Length: 193
Image (cartoon, rainbow, N blue to C red; front, side, top):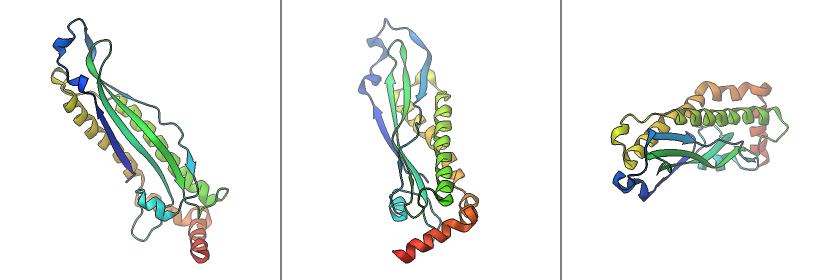
């Protein structure tokens, strides 16, 4: 599964009773979900497969981690500023896309793994779109803690798409991609190392 460290921020002011702001009208939505754009991440091509494995790169028993996208997901629940309600925000912090150094840039193998990792980037973008469409099921009794719990649960469900993409079939394709270049480059790196 992708390395996903969830950073949670809950502002104490969100827990203030509604009676402290009687002049504010109720929001159209008691709970609104937002998500930032997942920008193209910086790329690193100088790390080892062992480094990626320590970062949480998925790899089957005996397999070599070839690439990884890491990111921290920051969720915050805050009061709306112009009306009575809550806004739940998802931000993607410190994204990095990595391909192991044993697959040099310019090779078909490198391009193959890079395409795979950019599919993960597209999945993050789709997760953000789906997060923005969430609807809290109990808006009349929404508390910041309950909304935060719900948001974390829903994000975990959305992140399942990352794991599903990293299927055994997807990884099996690495053996034959580029006329078997990936296993050849890995074997050459082991001999040289």
